[in-house]
Length: 477
Image (cartoon, rainbow, N blue to C red; front, side):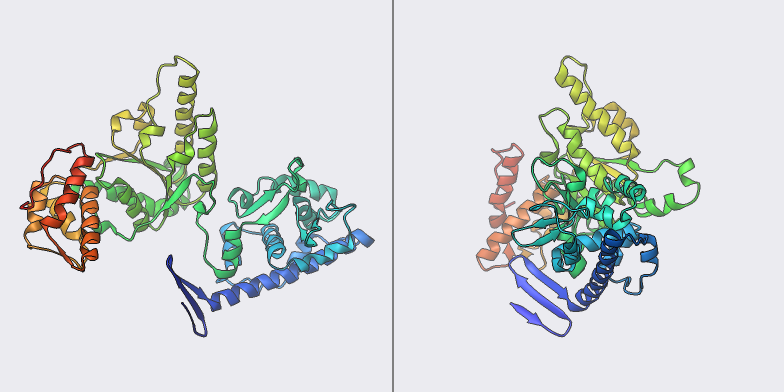
């Protein structure tokens, strides 16, 4: 279904509702159109420089540009502000966007034809003969920035190869041919997610690329939804306070000379006690993203690959105000062993690498483990605060049963949750599973009533998961 008014287009699908604000798109397109006009003017000047030697520095050209179109509300300006952008970043984004959105704007390069089919001219432009599309390369960027000035070309070459826009995968460098390993030949492409962001204002998440081994954790719950003992809540409050003030604290003059940036904290306790949920809520309450390290995409049997996978996380998130969450931390941060063979040596190297990277990470690193004693001793010494997440007692289980049931449903009799909380020593995860399955069954039977009869099979299933297959569950509680 599509509905439209003067400002907003709403589309609904099985995956949810999506809102496109035409006012946002209009402002973004205006800024992008201005950048394409700016780019066309610079192309013209550079082509004239090739033809008659008249030079103009990029600084002079940028200074003469009317910057009134760089409105605060546009995605282009937000992206430039995030990366402290200058004319270098403006050119990178403008050229990469134009190659996607309006490639004909690059036809000015056509005055200087490539030497042969799909080969490069002095401008570095790559021509796709299939669709006659001009594709900029790293050499094109350098030509646009430096013109024919070889000293400036060398300068921009040195700063572009490791530019943060490539590191953060806003832009990509692609080989034009499989056997072409010359960096200046690499094609510069705007990431599709960022292309869409520049138009519609929906900013990509850092985990939008399939090879990024971390996932953004999100939750609708708040700190008040956590059912915790007062001592546990107080300890978590310290971690939350750090996540909230991290940026402002270390921006103050002289703080870094007295206090080392970063915090290593830990949540430990039996499975199902809410460690992952707590990590999600801490991030939400602090207003920072929480990225959970995906062990399935990190750990490799090949020597050195685990470190490489983790390095992608630290490289992309190392200068961002976010929380790194290592679930099942003992898998990565396990005790180092006596070296008996090469396998032990490389396993110890992984732990040493992690220790070094965690120490230099400026934000909050949050570990979660079922078994604190399995962690390497050096890691345990560096943990600033450890929070034990105990199994809930009867009063806490009562709150979990009560708070976990959606408002449409009711327990019958009303005293049922008292019996459940008293007789069944489940964790929050167990209780959430039982409630979910009971609500599904009730909904399929066109009722909103949850009884012991409907709960019993799911309670038995949870006991079976915990290794108590023979535990009998009476429909009388």
